[in-house]
Image (cartoon, rainbow, N blue to C red; front, side, top):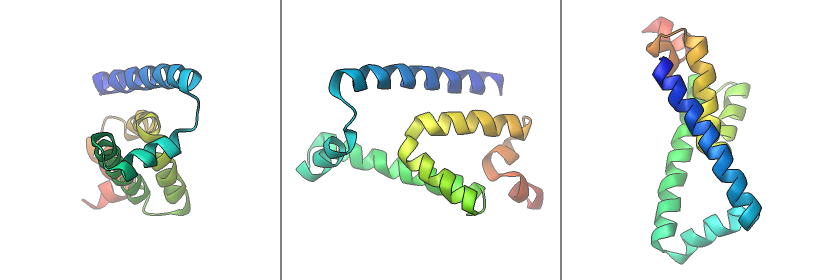
Length: 115
């Protein structure tokens, strides 16, 4: 679990640094570019659509892990719009809460009890 957490921290630091540099160079108006590429039917658009599918799967998993409670739905929305930066931070937190139990990490404490 320590190696996993180190990996998550590296992702967070790398993404924050990269995002700041890109934002300062190109501005913060990502959504028109992101969806514009999809509308163009280009390879970049294909990548963006594929990536958006991963974002939606991440959002559904986070909300499901919290049993689609109000806070789970809010976390799911954050997962969708926050991408890997959110998911890495969330998994870092969740891995600490799971105390090394992978079943709890993946399923959440309530579901892990019933399995």
